[in-house]
Structures are given as structure tokens and as C-alpha cells.
Length: 235
Ligand code: HPA
Image 1 (cartoon, rainbow, N blue to C red):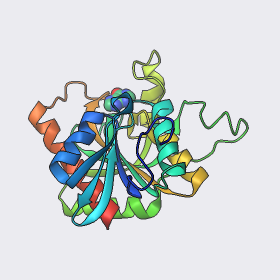
Image 2 (cartoon, protein in one colour):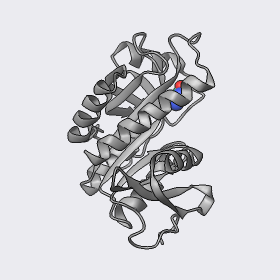
Image 3 (tube, protein in one colour):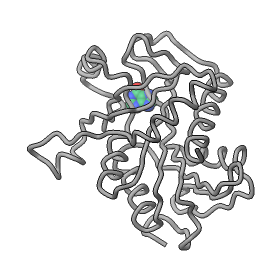
């Protein structure tokens, strides 16, 4: 096992879907995977391996924020040999044309985190998605009839920002949504030569705070996003 994951060697597939919420990992395993076996319960960060349309796939929670996803993604890549990682999460829209329940494929991720700046204080390292995964996910989402935006997101260290106007300014400059993990995942993928993509469902809008969803609508959109992630991993 690695420090935070209890799986034995070989128990994790080389393709993995990464929701933030471990209970969502359980939901994916129970509703989409066949013969799913739980490989991790350390800190309740549930992880499962099963098959999807005959292909071996894993799914595991990452927790919230860049320190948390960095720990799990690094161990998955370095200690378990995972090669394709797709984050499926939620994001808040900062673009007036990006509405709740729609999908954002994070082509790039800006960040206010020091995770990358610690390594490159004098450069702005570009955090970008793997283009092959991005291209596949886009066409799969379109074929499913889902409203899908492709562009940059802000991966923020702060959920309850004291400077919301700064985030809104990024929205005016074309950044589509705020979330809290993609930049760190993309940086780790770059360091280890593996493929990563972030797919986000818009759960709330900072531009249209009145936009709301019912629990059932949210569940349906999350289910659509999971399908896009799984189909992308096996295609
Ligand atoms: N900010 C940061 N992360 C998020 C948000 C948000 O508004 N919504 C969902 N994840």
C-alpha cells in the first residue's frame, strides 16, 4: 500500500475516474461498474475497481482542494501506475453564458495556489488538459446532447472568497468557472507524463445566483458527466 491508499499492487486499474466526494465514487461503482471491489477505505476515501463495458476501470474520491487531490493523484500515478485520470466534479460559473447543469471541460486551469509557484517562482507554468482526452470527451458529450463548454477554469484554494470581484474579473477575461482541483491534477500529470482531464458540472452560478436546481436535476446531470468520463476513459 501507499501512505494513504490501502490497495495491493494490481488492484487499481490504469484508468480512473476521480470525483471529489467518496460517496459519489461509491455511487459510480454501484451504478456503472460491474463486479466492483472496494480497494480503499483509509480516511473513508473510498476507491473501487470494476469493469465498464468490459474494460477495467477504477473510481476513487479525492477530497476537496488541491492538497487533497495532489496526495491521492500522486500515489495513484507513482505507486499504482495509473495513466489516465479524469476528475468529475462541480464548479461555480463566472461566465454569464455558462449555466447550472451545463458541462465545462477544463482545457486549462489558472490557479491562485502556490503548488506550482513553489517549483517555478519566476514562471507561470501552463496547466493544461491532455488534448486526446479533451477531444474525446467533447465529442462524447456532444453526441449525448449535453450543453458543453470548453475553456479555462480557475482552481482556487478558497471556496469562501473575500475577493469575489477578482474572480468575477477572471470571468470577464474568459475564464468559465471556479473549482478547486484541476490545476494540481494537470501539474502532476505533466510531472509524470500521464493523461489528465477535468470535467465539471456547473452546480452554482456566481453571475446568476438565482439559478437553482432540484436534487433530481443535479443527480441527472452528475450522471451524464459520469457517463462522459467513463466513455472517454474506454474510447
Ligand atoms: N467555488 C469553488 N469551487 C466550487 C464552486 C465555487 O463557487 N462551486 C462548486 N465548486
